[in-house]
Image (cartoon, rainbow, N blue to C red; front, side):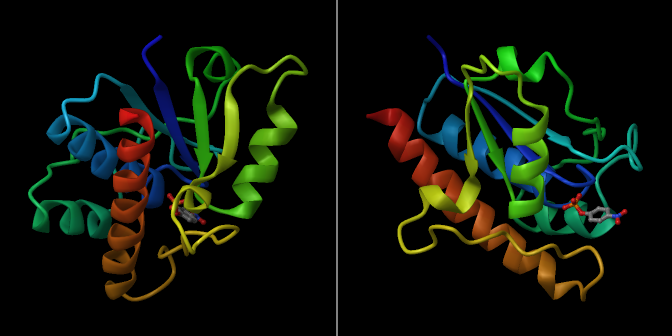
Length: 153
Ligand code: 4NP
């Protein structure tokens, strides 16, 4: 079965769209056939494009994410996706709380896939300086590479 990966943060305008973009690129480069999407646990930004700082960092690495639109996690996600990765602990708890009892999707913390980063969160750059988005990009790119390695086996 084709893996289907969902990345989840709070607003779906900063971290998870960047994780989606980095992983989509890495999977394409590796010739991996995989479905990719992102969503937020909150609904404040539903329908909005990614934060302009997230758009800017993605563009610096050659990826246009301006066409993405934020959406909230929904019940169907737990059957549509084989893997759901939370960007931090709060969102992991929120997803686990919403998961149906017989959930087949594997739910986990994104950085758990990166050697040496187990149990760590991708820091929320929303209220910080623009440079925080470079850190986010570096972290989600590391995770994207680790995921591609995992799904290529
Ligand atoms: P994200 O960042 O969860 O990475 O998309 C945030 C976006 C919005 C808010 C917080 C974090 N907010 O408080 O509206």
